[in-house]
Length: 68
Image (cartoon, rainbow, N blue to C red; front, side, top):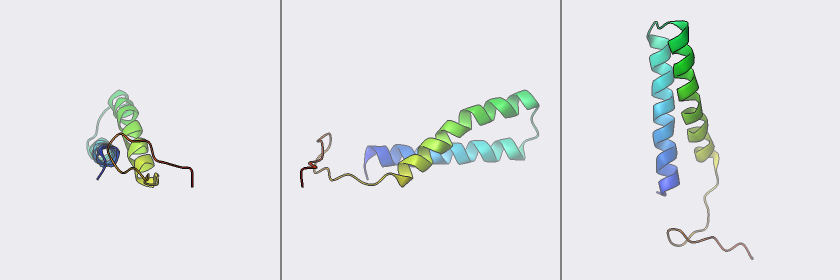
């Protein structure tokens, strides 16, 4: 499991937890807006990382060879 995939899973968990807390707790409008402003980027990043295709890296930090 690559570090990018791990960070995507963690971001997705944070985003889902943030949204579930916002909807379960009866907060004011300001705190609801601030919570969504923080949770939405985490959710988008987590979904985007999960939809990304895997690269052909053999080792950590190496650029994949795309000549074939």
